[in-house]
Amino acid sequence: MRLLRMASAVELLSLAVLLTNLFTVHAKVITTFGGPLHGISYVAVIAAASLAPSTGLRGTMWRAFIPGIGGLLALRNLRREGARLGNA
Image (cartoon, rainbow, N blue to C red; front, side, top):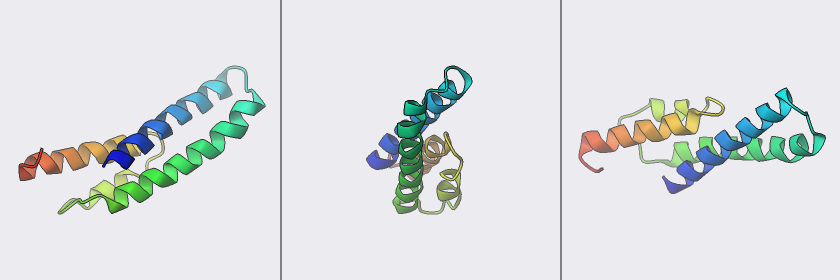
């Protein structure tokens, strides 16, 4: 779950930087480094969510496919499942 938490934070931050760059100065260097960073973190969120122990929650992995906030939604879903089972 630690990997999912870190990857979702990087994904959200990189998306915010890319969108801010798009609507302000549109510096090519930010796009050059931010784009692949966002893509890798997006794939890492999906992979981490698919490996997370989510017993009975089919929607956890599918929430991870939402760009930007999917990792945070998957984390919330996993926490909710842990609280329901008495693990958190």
